[in-house]
Amino acid sequence: MALSGTIKDFGIADIFQLIGNQQKTGSLVLKNNEEQVDITFFEGNVIAASEKNRKTMRFLGEMLVNAELVTAAQLDEALAQQKRSLKRLGDIVVEMGAISEQHLAQMARLQTTETVYRLFQWKSGTYEFSQKEVDAGKHAFDPIRAETILLEGFRRSDEWPAVLRALPNLDSTVRRLKPVEPDMPAPDASDPMAMVTSRPGAVHETIYNLAADPTRSLQKIADLSRIGDFEALKVVRDLVANGNFQLVAPPRGGRAAIKELAAGGKAFARSGVFFRLVLGVACFAGTLAAMRSLSAAPGGHVEGTLRHSAGAHLVARAQLLRLESALEVYRLEHGEYPAALHALVESQLLADRDLSYPFEHAYPYRRTATGFVLLPPLD
Figure 1: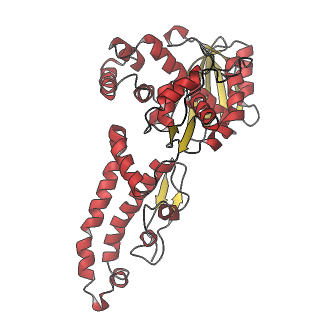
Figure 2: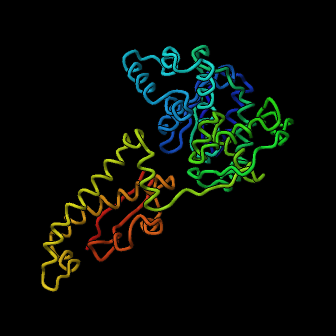
Figure 3: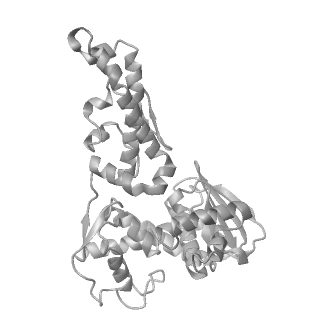
């Protein structure tokens, strides 16, 4: 069976339903701009899903570290072995004794389902299904029925916006106010996709206990729960509504930036943001000598002299690095770059004059799909 077309004409749900009903085996490739997701089916069941441009936090190794199932050192060792042996990362961490096969299967399934469920947010794109032989035994978890994916995908599409409205910032923390009642209602048992618990309120108690550390963010609680962002955050929302939790907004401004730099650790250093921030500060400080010499001009007016000298370009180079560093800190706090530079002032990361110094006009700035464009003004 050859199946291809656009998601606008034939939606994600229709594609899964057709492959599931006909119990097809093969690969489904979905593309949306720079995003690409490959899903492997075996007899109509999902057995794997991968992303072409998967974010670091969605890598299996990072998920294992974030869930505190393996340490960062163990992951580094496993990655080094993977380069030498070309074995799958999951097989290596199990052979190392760092994780059990049961936990690996749990996290591999979670990685796959989270990848697939995000597809239900796509409104456009293309798809192509190709039949081919698949070895289902190579995958860590039991196949997932296409019908199960459909039911859960529809449920998340309906409920996810409400959860995000209640919990808009995943860097927030919670303060525990009262313990969870043992008879707190569990998920609706009549719902085939509701989470099965050993007793009423067990999932709520798990999330409540994970919040014992008041410094843990909502994202960290979700990572440690190993049940996925949607399920974990939905329980957090329930506990806030029930009075068990009080939502605490993350700190803002310079203190938050310092805290983020300290907490980012190895992953932050790998991103290169820390290096750019230090470099920006060093370069900006290095221009102070030039600025002091310019201040000796008639009238002692530094800005006026800079705007009509080569020194302006020297200062602008350092100022651009400073602006870029502030933009990176803003992204760490808010999850995305700002729509306009003035948001850096509102977040107390920069002063208003920093947006144009040493020129009269502000630095041209534009947020893009992959980052931002920042240039010196044509002054």
